Length: 96
Image 1 (cartoon, helix red, strand yellow):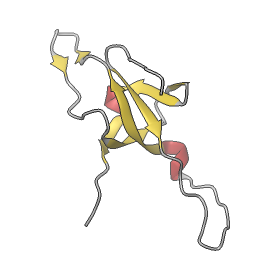
Image 2 (cartoon, rainbow, N blue to C red; image 1 turned 90 degrees about the vertical axis):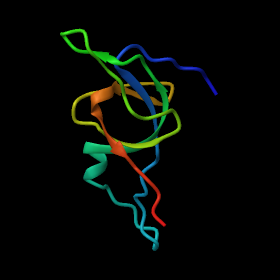
Image 3 (cartoon, one colour; image 1 turned 60 degrees about the horizontal axis):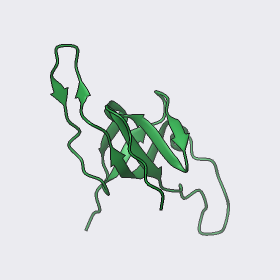
């Protein structure tokens, strides 16, 4: 596995492949997969700094499964999605 360290205010996510196939083998395009994605956090940069100098830390850890926005723009590198920390929308948890 390659090492990737992102800069201040960024997060690197390895996107999970969307399940776009029914139990009968029919492949379909999910509209939500164009707007939102689910993936595992691989690297987190230093906290974002506001104009008044206050740091805004991201309250997740490496290895956390998250929901993120694809609408605001992102970059890709070596299979990772790199985006601003504020585009992480939430944590995806397992249900019992």
